[in-house]
Length: 227
Image (cartoon, rainbow, N blue to C red):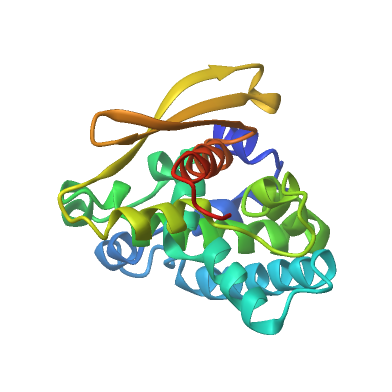
């Protein structure tokens, strides 16, 4: 657990909370009565995440209408985003899964990883309070948003680019990490976006996600799109 605590940058007073956050229902069902699954923690973590993200967006974007705030919050707390943060933290390595679930790739399943991220967040909240939970969310879910300087809107360049490319079914877009520099706490990532085998954009950022957005932004600019 100590290695995971280091990745989370949080030291638990009650480490049993963290252990419980890593128990999938498939494992709890196999060892009936010995331990609880992380489903209750997941429920709490989902609510905490929603409240903290909503509050931050409300304060950060005073001119953004409700509909745009809702879309932005949804993009930040969706399963795809949460499982990416879970993978970044290596949570899958520590999960307790039933034998069948483990054998069938549950350790890499998006839904399981996203749920575990929420459960771990709840464990941090119960153990250390709201400030500890906020610190965790700001270092993961809201990290990329902190480097966004436009106070009036949030542009998801990757989605815009994908929508354009999808007009031609034979075309496909991929993002490739080409460089990674700096210490663990202050890395700079460089990503290229490829249209089939051709480079159409390059971007850098404090995270892979931000670098991908900047690469998509450059691609859209080169394509003459208004962004």
